[in-house]
Amino acid sequence: MNATINKFGYPATLIADYEHWVALLRPAQATLGALVLACKDDSIAFSQISPSAFQELSQAIIDIETVLSHAFNYNKINYLMLMMVDPHVHFHVLPRYAQTTTFEGISFEDPGWPQQPDLTHKTDLSTGQSEQLIHFLKSHWPSA
Image 1 (tube, rainbow, N blue to C red):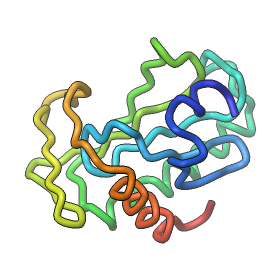
Image 2 (image 1 turned 30 degrees about the horizontal axis):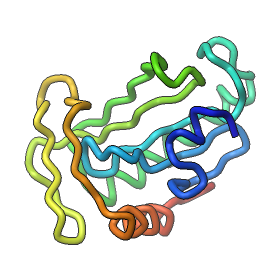
Image 3 (image 1 turned 135 degrees about the horizontal axis):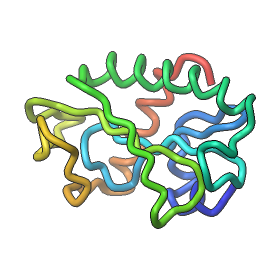
């Protein structure tokens, strides 16, 4: 795995493993169910990923939206490809919520709603709470 994937906590944060992509729980939960969708290769520009990685991307996105929609009933979803600090191709996947959401008694806010997401905001989770969220999402993942 490349350095960007490792920085986001792989393998502990792994939810789904595809041939060319991984879906990871975003350690900083800006909103409930925030993920990182990262390409496994060493590309540092979106145009550099392989044709097969581009093709597989559609399945990963379908899976993400299916699981997060059913699990948390988000209002919108944002994909941010920032790659300023972490250079390898990856997206921050942020489900967006008009109201406070909860998971296992933990409240999650979306203070940026309905404007751009506030990436400085996060809901702190213990290691056990993160593991519980990862297990929950893995158990609902359709294809990886």
